[in-house]
Image (cartoon, rainbow, N blue to C red; front, side, top):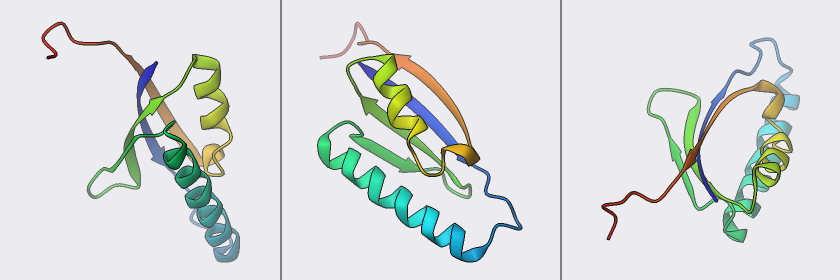
Length: 91
């Protein structure tokens, strides 16, 4: 199942810089493992924002929820998920 996911990150301005750096490093490691596994085949930065557009390829909505809620930055994100279907004009 394919899902288009928009993630907007809202880190607190008063967040301890060391906590921020450690959380961002854990996020990068986790997201790269998901990319290498094929579960997160597309990741695109939105210009000028601390946001991204991603495509996830997972077996179920439950799996997607588990992957997203395990992101280290999840507590600081607004996430919008859109399920995708094959377009009838796709070759």
